[in-house]
Amino acid sequence: MDISSILQGGYHHPLARTWQSKRQLTKSMLMYPIFITDEPDASVEIASLPGQRRWGINKLEGFLAPLVKQGLQSVILFGVPLKCEKDMRGTPADDPAGPVILAIKKIREHFPTVYIACDVCLCEYTDHGHCGLLNTDGSIDNSPSVDRIAQVAVNYAKAGAHCVAPSDMMDGRIKGIKRGLIDAKLGNKCTLMSYSAKFASCMYGPFRDAAGSAPSFGDRKCYQLPPAAKGLARRAIQRDTAEGADIIMVKPALPYLDVISDAAELAPDHPLACYQVSGEFAMIHAGAAAGVYDLRTMAFESVDSMIRAGATLILTYFTPEFLTWLDD
Ligand code: PBG
Ligand code: ZN
Image 1 (spheres, helix red, strand yellow):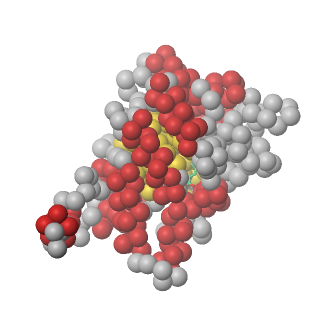
Image 2: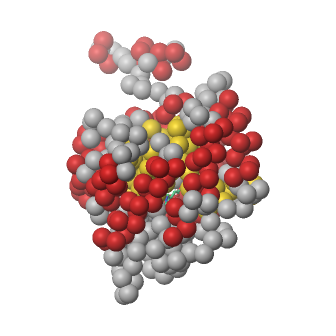
């Protein structure tokens, strides 16, 4: 055998295998998505998301304390309003007595080291379930949608969110939110993480069950990207960096590793997030339950692939498990 044919000597030992990756998963790369409802004492299992619950504001401290002790450093909050009056402009989104704003304050008070991101969208709060405001014919009315989304983002930042993350996919919302943050004198106190390349995926199903945010008519294809649209994703990433995004995100993650890799090339000077979405999480659980693979091995393999593609921040429902596994 020729000398140059031999690679195995370089990775025969478990430690040497770890040296073959440019970066490895650490606890600080994990952001945990959590669902907060307006039932203050709720702790309700979400059937389609194994191990995940809808939490009431009074249960947050007890739920988060052991995770923070294990090294949880950041969360992203999703509001799940069950009792509020939804309307066409998503008024309950930034209700000062609503679950998201109360949760921001509660977490800051009890866990001052935890970095709090807030998903910003209207679909959980509009009566029609779409992510923006609509014209009378049911199409998206872009400009008032951007204004309303920016207003919600600024109100989350005012309440103490360290990061606002718009997931709505309205054109121009990054510029609108950045302007709003600057005008509110929060430009240097709040990170703007853009769901830049968010695809119209079938993998958000369990999330929509959990958050009650499925649209009442139509779908989201006129604002979320077509799954095969590599060029549009690249343009959205470049646009959002130009409009002032501090972090770029690709979502879903595992089926879009090439887009993560493109984002790493197009925005090399930004942190790069990817969202291992509800359907990916449910799929990994279902495969493990069916005996296809070991849950932990597959969870690591999926996230290691995202890191290899270029991600520096991972939003994942596996965060509590990873905090335990990374200690082993
Ligand atoms: C709301 C939103 C969705 C997700 C995050 N924010 C659902 C959607 O756009 O339909 C999906 C997250 C997941 O599936 O885990 N705009
Ligand atoms: Zn939405």
